[in-house]
Amino acid sequence: MNTTMKRFLGMVLVVTMLLTLFVGCSPKEQDVETEKTEQAAKEETTEAASTEKAETTEAEETEATKTTEAAEDITNSAMKEAEEALLKALEPLPEKDTGAKLGAIESTLSNPFWITMQNGYEDAAEEYGVTIEVKATTTETDLTGQLDIMNAMIAQEFDAIAISPLTEQNLIPGIVEANKADIKVVTVGNNVNKEALDAAEGVVVAHVTSDFKLQGQMGADFIIEKLNGEGKVAVIEGIPGATQSEARKNGALEAFEAAGMEVLPVVTANFDRQAAYDATLALITANPDLKGITCGNDIMALGAIQALKESDMKEQVFVVGVDFIDEARESIKNGELDATVAMSPYLFGKGGTIVALKAIRGDEFNEDIIWTPQKLVEKGNVDTMEGWK
Image: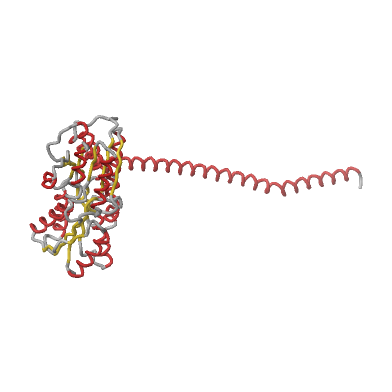
């Protein structure tokens, strides 16, 4: 083979090898480039989706915040109006930072109503720059224990004491002793028997209250409307002789009787859940055609609900309470408790603090202060009462 031929064959071989390399490697390189392109596209898509999601979430959170704020404006408007009414009724308001030493005596703190009232006392005391000590009995029926608390406060030389007597009689001796010690006494919610107080020569400077009788009437009217004025109904009262218990019982009885309902004898449950549960079982056992029950507070109403549920009679019997505690609110939402009458224990406490300070200042009170708003709450309007306390 001559030299020229050898060179020609060599060139052919080199070209062939180059072509082989080109053909063999290019698809792989193209695949890599394709994968890089696809990955970049995915990353861009993911980033775009994340951005969109974040913007959507932010928008939803903003909208939710606006909705919540709007709801608070709506649900708290009733509470705001109630507080404004309280302050207007108590004008001229007392001075702040006087250093006054206040005491307050409630019923058992096992009832959320009284805890909320305690919060009202303490928040108002902080607002006015004074101190307050809130005490409560162990049970709703500890009459002697409540008097012992008052006597202890008198010994501690408080400037004023706000009291919510368990009955209209049990704290009269304490009021007399407080008067002797020049300690101002105001009643909040529950009052004392005026004739008995006068006979003991005791003085209560002022009384912050609500229309308890109307509360009983409102609950009864709800049941009357639901039953079209027909059927057998019952009233479960709290503590006999207690201001709010007697008034609520009488308000319900008068409304039922005026409507021509068949009213069973009043049953006593001392504001106790278990007692109301037992009383309701006895009522429905003796009266399987019972259609409605009004209770002197929510605790008893919830006991009645439990008894009716366990007896498969809740759908037959309407139940109404008083106080609008949180558990009652949830029960209404769940379709169990039919209604309750809302009042404001928080404003009771706030009002008690302000009135006590006014009494220390020497203000005169010519009549009972009836300012606490009240409203019938049922499933149709319970959501509008979220800000109530």
